[in-house]
Image (cartoon, rainbow, N blue to C red; front, side, top):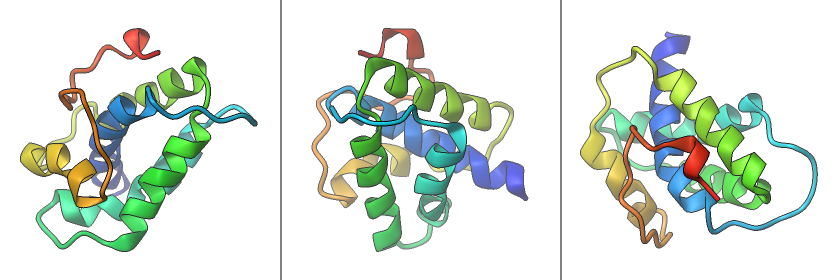
Length: 119
């Protein structure tokens, strides 16, 4: 169950990774635990349920935390690692997630994003 919970989180971050490129902030280095914690409440939405305010708050928190290029690349890698080998996520909902949370994204959201190209 933990694996399937992380997959949606990873895909949310695929969504968020795109968002991260625009999120400057200072502070400590981001960790996978932080990424997963911020995004775990989005799992239900990605599996067809209603969006929860905690999901949007988590995405916004992650965006604020991922201040440096390295933070954004780390978050991307965390998400891709969690997503590896998991299935059952509605990818259409992944791409809809920023709009559901009132966040604008000018990039295509994809689980195949190249983390090394995140700025």
